[in-house]
Length: 164
Image 1 (spheres, rainbow, N blue to C red):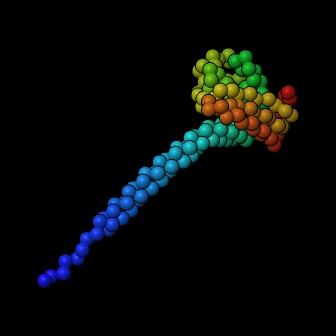
Image 2 (tube, rainbow, N blue to C red; image 1 turned 90 degrees about the vertical axis):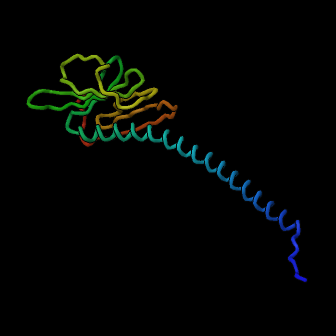
Image 3 (cartoon, one colour; image 1 turned 60 degrees about the vertical axis):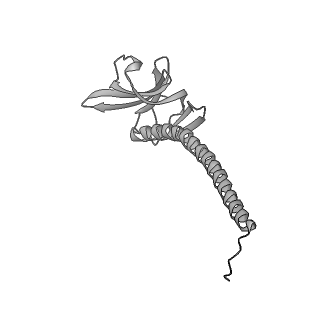
């Protein structure tokens, strides 16, 4: 007579239970990981807008930092950053201003009146304010479309002709 190995139902139940515990753990871990990933992506998107605006303003000012070339003036009924330069004996100005929910930039001759809608859109913002604190210090306040408020102080090496 041959000895047949006996199968116990407890062996099958144990394997099925172990498989179910593993499957439930995988599903819970995947769900938790997806939630954490979505939160990280949202935070990165919000921080990106703030970093772009601060980096853009900082680099524009330092690129134009020459004696009297950086100032704050009026453009489109609000304060704007004015970056002036002379090219072939003609004065030009880069206006960085807030218009229609956007941070805008426009490069034009200094003595021309131009419609603010002609500028290039840099990024969408909810609010943007600039002020000249001293002849070499500029303060920017802006709010991203996600509601994140940022403040930036930029110090120039050279003084502006006009102070606020």
